[in-house]
Amino acid sequence: MYVQAFNTLDHHHPSYLIGCPVSGEALVIDPTSDIAQYLRAARRAGLTINHIAETRTQRDYLSGTWALADATDAPVYLPDNALLEGSALSFDTPLVIGVRDGDSWLIGQLRVRVLETLQGDPDHISLLVTDSEDADRPLGVFSGALMLTD
Image (cartoon, rainbow, N blue to C red; front, side, top):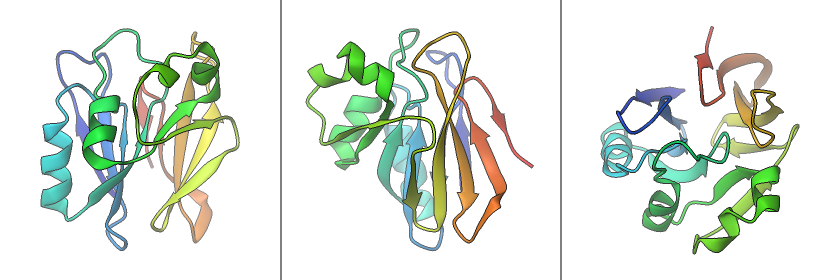
C-alpha cells in the first residue's frame, strides 16, 4: 500500500493519498483546497486518483473534494448523513456515493471499509483499509482527526 500524508495550514487534520501499486488506483481522503499537490503526488507514484472520500462533512476548512472530483472524474464517498442534509447534492460532481457503517469498496487490491465513528459529528466515519486477500490484518485506519497503522 502506498500512503502519503498532507498537512496544510487551512486543514485541521491531515489528508491522505492511498494507492494500490499493483493496479495503480488511488484514493484521496479529506482533500484540501490545494488539489494540485494530490495530482502531482499521484503522478510521481504512478497512480491514478479514481476515488475521493470525506470522513465527515467538512465545515471547518476549505475542502478540495469537489474541485478534485471535477479534475479526476472520481466518485466522492460521503457519509450518508451528509447526504440527508443536502449539502453534497448542491454541487455538480461526477458521482456522489453515500456510505454508512459496514459499506466497502475496492481500490485495486485494497479494501476500504466504512466504520461509524462517534466523534461529535453525526456524519463522521472512519475508513479501515485492508489487503483484500487478508482482510483480518488492517493496513490503516483513517478517521479524519487521526490515523492509526500497525
